[in-house]
Length: 215
Image (cartoon, rainbow, N blue to C red):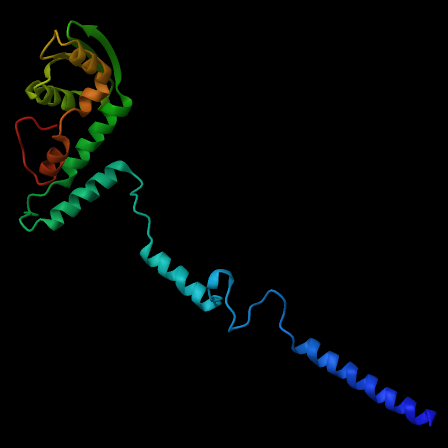
C-alpha cells in the first residue's frame, strides 16, 4: 500500500513542476507592455518603425530658420520680396551692390572709432578708421546725415576729416531739454539707425535703382 502512495505522490509533484516551468516560460517580461496595453497617459507603445518615421518627418519639416549670418539673411529676405513681386525686372537686379553696402554697414558699426563730444543742442562725432573702414564711413555717413537733416527732430551736417567724417547733429529745438537729452542718449550708433529708410533703400539697391541720398 505504501508503495502505491509513494508512486501517486511522485506523479503529482512531477505534474506541478512541469506546470510551473511552462507558466514561467510563457509569462510576459516585466515592464514591457503587451500589444493591447497602453502606456502611461493612455498612449499606445510606439514601434521602432514608427519612431524612425517620426524622426524622418521632423528632419524634412523642422529645418532651422536662422540664416547664420546677418548679411546673408538680409539678402535672402530681399530675394524673397523680389520673387514675390511680379513686376520685378530681373535684368536690372544688382544684389552685389546690396552686398557691398552691407559690408560697409558692418565696417562702420563694428570697426570704426568714434569720439563724440557735446555741443550746444547736440553732439559732434569724429568717426574714423583705416582702409575699407574709412571708405565705408564716408560712403555711409555723408548721405545718412542728409537723411537725418530731413527729419523733424534733427539738424545734421558732415565734414571730411583725416580717416573719416565729423558728424554734427543737433536738435531742431535746441532749447528742448528732453529732445537734446534723447539725441545725446542715442549717440552715434543710435543716430545711425534713425529713420525708416534703411529697408526701402536696401530693396531699391537690389533692384538696381539709384536715388539722391543712397548709402
